[in-house]
Image 1 (cartoon, rainbow, N blue to C red):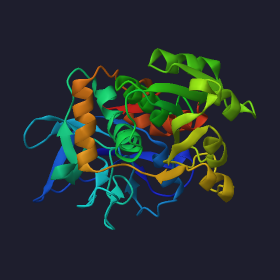
Image 2: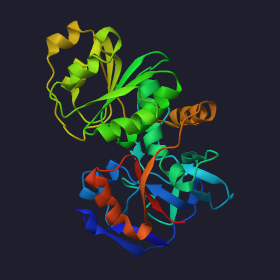
Image 3: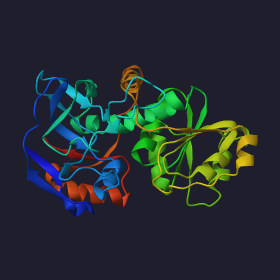
Length: 326
């Protein structure tokens, strides 16, 4: 089969098209002939060597295609071996594409429980863009964040995959959504997907500006932070509010005023990815509510994976970057 192979860690140009053996069929596993795969920032970190993946290696957590044994159209669940505890994953847990060969290939082999029916009405590109960002966001908002209809949510970084999905899912269940962004255009695009308003995080006083958009200026019930800006995120919360953290794209270290934190009665909640139960909840929500497809900003052929990574790292798009094999 054709695959994009990582033979050394580094920049986008280390991704090279190669012919490699097809996956071996074995009990408890299924093979999916992929139609599309979506990029995630996680793929960039794997490419750079931050997850000590074996070399040579095939990247990719997200994908959609056809089961080779049944002919069913399926999504690939990128969260492998979560385990029996919903509160947190097992020690065996990993993300597809970390150590198991991923979806930048014509075929991918995954555990049987790691496929789910492709939602109706989605193109292959839209379907491939859903699993990782959808699963991660669903767990962050509902399983961990306990978001309810009528609550006020602040989402950091409009335009990114998690932020975009958060706007759509939260609006679908009746939450009031505000976003931050570096661009008025991205705020406008988020509003088209269900956000009520937004502020520019290029303004040093953006937490104050965001709070002014909340009811009575009290702050937000829930802030979703996928960038690592904890101090300012907490400043946007109402007393007793909840900060859900699921990324560190801008900062890996945070300094908190402990006294302010406990007097504010705040909650700091960590989360990542999700379980098969969370994935089932996501698919049920998509079936029950009018949630738009994940926006796709750019589609590249498999052979142009390096160019797709450069586009992703450029940060100019709104929505997901997808590799198409159709």
